[in-house]
Image 1: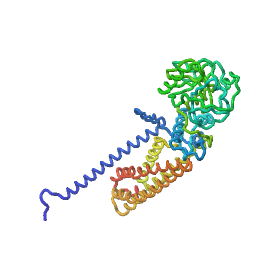
Image 2 (image 1 turned 90 degrees about the vertical axis):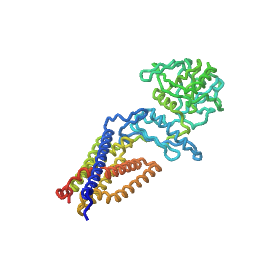
Image 3 (image 1 turned 45 degrees about the vertical axis):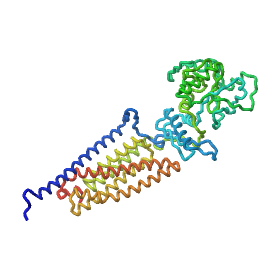
Image 4 (image 1 turned 180 degrees about the horizontal axis):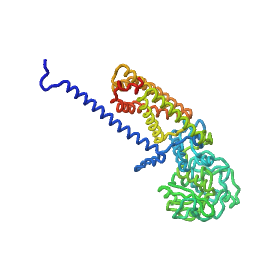
Length: 519
């Protein structure tokens, strides 16, 4: 029966196929544009002098973070200094962690790691530390600063070998060797030194009268100290301090300059207005560190504490005051200075060895799989670029173990290429057209790739959990970089490799170029 006038089945079928091919080509071009944008972004992230991301309130520096085994540093484990039968709340541990992290950042330490271990410990890893002892002293102290009310009749209760009792909570005792040295009398008004930040305080602090320590107070009276203890009243603490920093005058005298919060300003104003001429004790962790006399009311919220420390100790004390006191006493369980396991020369040789290994793998892929292998090599470079850009952007701390995890993920990516190309060759040998063989090869290889990488991700999750449970940071670095590498390789293998194969190979006639596919 003749076909109705106006209908041309062959032409309609050709038009439908052409439309499908056009849509496929459009998707491939859009995919290529997305891939090029992704590669450009990754290359920008990897720039050595990357300026970082600074948009409005978003500030994120982009730089490579090396672990202690690559650059050396300090590793400290802190533990709650409380009896075993006393439960430490998660809230207190989180607060302590945040305060310690703020103190470390306040000391200018780059890329610190501060995290909670279990229910009673905090791990602190600090790369490139010059003075480990001073850093440990700063982060482990409770940092409770109290302004206490002292009367001349209370001198007998001030003893060097005993911490003060105040009506503001209790903390664990500090070591006796950390008590302050005597402060000399006649402390002059401070003037900023060239090495410190300029300080302008509207009102004179706590006087030009002699600044008294326990020894000075006891020397001024003829009353023998008693073994009894008195509970001193705390006027306020560093919870009411908004900012603090250390300074030094031309004579070498050191001071803490502090600015109070609105509530602290009111408390301090009320107290100093009614206690002019009295002594105000300043205690750090229940130890008296300064005892200036109030010469006038302080109502502006700014004041200065004269203190007989070195400038570095004064600055570290200011950091403690600025970021508040720890909610629980802590003690150092472990403190270890770690040197870099690889010197610069060894690091360069290891990098060269890794590049040689990668080059040999790429050469094998190009030799055995020919044109698809060359495309796979190109995608492998794209994969390494994207993965390392993620390590830098997040950032991931690079250690020897994390680099090993990244290297293993490259091997897994190559394994996926082998599965895909072997399926591709099987489809081509069975007579499939090239574009069909590409899709069927990916479809056939996908279940194996999916299952093997899923098993790897499950293993990474288990290793990550075990590393957190048993404080094995080496295992954690390995599991994190391996997991990220596997996820990136899945994306590049299935998306980028497939796009490149279609764009380049769809227009090649296999019958004319069988050697390009090693068939």
